[in-house]
Amino acid sequence: MAVLSICTQMINAQTEMVDIINYALTHSRDVRKSAWQVQEAKYIRKEALGHGLPQVEGSASYSRMMLQKMDLSAFSSMVPSDYSSIFDALSNLDHVDMASANVQVTQLIYSQAFWVGLKTARKTQELYTLQKAKNEEEVIADVANTYYQIQSMMFQLQTMDKSIQNLKEIYHMSELKYNSDLIKETDVSRLKVSITNQDVTRQTLQNSIDLQINYLKVLSGMPSDSTLKISPMASADVEKETHLNPFVLGQVPSYQVLLKQNELYTLQVKQAKAKYYPTLAAFDKYSYSHYNIPDIYKTGSSMNTIGLSLSVPIFSSGIDYAKVKQAEFKQKQLNEDISQTKDMLAIQYNNAMLEYQTAHNLLFVQKENRELAEKVYKQTHLQYVEGLASMADLLNVNSDFLQADNSYDQQALKCKTAEVKMLQASGNLKQLTIKK
Image (tube, rainbow, N blue to C red; front, side, top):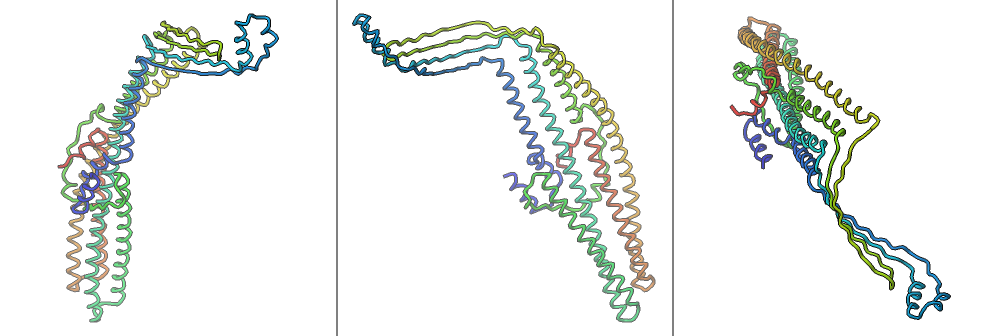
């Protein structure tokens, strides 16, 4: 139903970025994989808890011992007639049946490894939850950057269409002037070449847009036949300054994951040290055995045993100590990663904020330049119509206008990508999931 709902919305209206992001947070393969890991962690914890609960084991066996027949006729005359039947049975005996069944209940009383393992399982569940949040932020960043890239190319396509339309109007006027012998044939041909070149550029740009849209579908987990309608980047949305979020290191998912991993490493050191401690368990075992010698003897017996089992480590030739040191050195390595990440995240935030402020300031410079280029183009176009400007002048100012328009578009794209970097560095990318 969710797929049908969003696909219907995409067909009937423009597809907003927030809708694609929220869709991706449910259907993206990476996010779904993280969700399965969270579910897996729940059962890891249940498994760890189960080791401290009663364990019931049962076993059963049956065997038949095959015997060679014995000739006891020589002895039958030596015993009283009352026992002759026994000798006859022994003479025909060819097997003995034996069966047994056992049930044992074990309850762990004390184990340092159990308590540490239980804490480790809980921390693992918390780690997977944080890892899911980290993957969600990465999906949001990928979707947002791809969406902005598509919007930027749509803006370029819009500009290209406008330029081609203007050139075609000029071409029609130039044909009339050429028919009236007012301009040379080379001017008309040059204009036609410019139109053809821009048509080719437009087709290449359209193909790039289609490829990016398909990539966006893969990122979001959408069906390949979904229809996305993405509008060009709006100037008002870009020129509006984004609120700069304060940098709080503890809110960044990637840093939270490292801290949780450090907690897990601490428990792994304790887990390695837990092998130094004894383990105590109680057990209750019930056994039943049955023997059958055909026509001679049948019997069964049962036995109930209650006791304690104590395991005390005495000497392991340094194996346990080596495992403890390995765990400690792994944690030291992680601590170096945490320190480096702490510094890098602060630098990334400062760089992203500086990049955004610079891009936003230059955006208005590019905007003024684009407006000026458009004004010059309109004036030169009017002069060309009146015969005061040449074809070369018109083509040059049209090229300048295209360049100014694309420069503004690229600056707008830098603003939006820098905004994504800034939100990601401060751990606030979830703001993009909220409809404004």
